Length: 365
Image 1: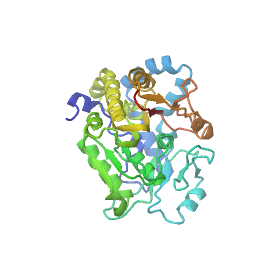
Image 2: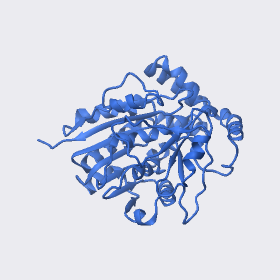
Image 3: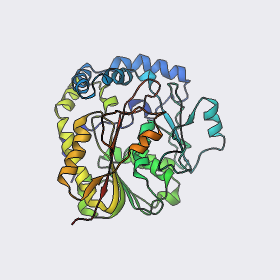
C-alpha cells in the first residue's frame, strides 16, 4: 500500500538542502556559486512559510530562533561537508581538501567513529565541486550537511549486523552507513517512485558491484515493513519525512506552501506510524535512531515521547556523549533530553537543523 496522495504531496523533494542537489555548473568557483546563490535563492524566501516558522519557532526556541533564522534564510552562509567514498577516492583528495582549508569533521573522542569514515568540513561558506553521475564509474565523494552524519554515528552499526534504512532517499545516510561498516544484510527502502530511482542511482554511484549486489533496495510503504519483516533487523534508521525547514523556506509556489503548512500536522501521524513499524521490525536488544531535518517539536520530541508512552518494549538511550565530542563543530539546543539531540544552525557552524533520538528495544514481558 502506498501513502495517500495528500501525504505524498507533503514530502519535500530534497532532504539535505536545496543547495546540495548535483546540477550543471558544479565546476564554478566558490565565489561564483556564492554570487549565484545570493542572487537567486535569497529572492525566493517564501514569506508565508517564514511567518509560520516565526510564530512557531520563536515560541519553541526563544531567543535562539533569531540567529537560526538568519542562517536558514541566507544560503550564502551555508556550508557543505565532503564525505569521502572509501570504495573510490583518489589518494591525494584529502591533501587537496586540507590545502583548501578543510579539516576532519568528527573528533576521535566520539563513542563510535570507524577509521573508514572520513568527512571533511570548512568553516568558510561555499561548496566543493560536485561530481556528475556516470554509469559504471564511482564517485569519489558525497556532498552533504555534516549534521546528516550524526544519526548514523548514533546508530553505531557494526560489521555483520542486519540494518534497515527505512526512508532512505536520496541515499546520503545509507552511503554513510556503508562507509562505517559492512552490514550482514542492508535494506534501503523508499516508498516514493521518483525518490526510489534517485536512491538507486546514488547507491550505484558510490558502491561497487560486489557490495551493491548484496544490498536490498525496495519501494515499499515503510508503515508495512514491520509486518513484512518482524524482528528481523539489529539496527534501524528512521530518517522520517518531515517539514524540511531549509527547503520549505524557499518554496516557490505560495499555494503549495500554504497547503503544506495546513497539512503539516499530518506528518507527525506518519512519523509515529513509521516508528511503530520500525519497532516491530527490530529485534529485541536492537537499536533504532529517529531523525528529521526540522526544528519542529511536534515532529521531534513529541513523536518520540508518544512512542515511549505507548510502546512498553522500547527504552531511551543516552546519546549526550556525542554532543560533547562534536561541540567544536556543531551547536546543540540545550533544552533536550538525554536520548535526543537538536542541531541548530549558526554562522560559521551552519549545520542542521537535525534532530536525532535513539531507542533500544527490550524483550516484552
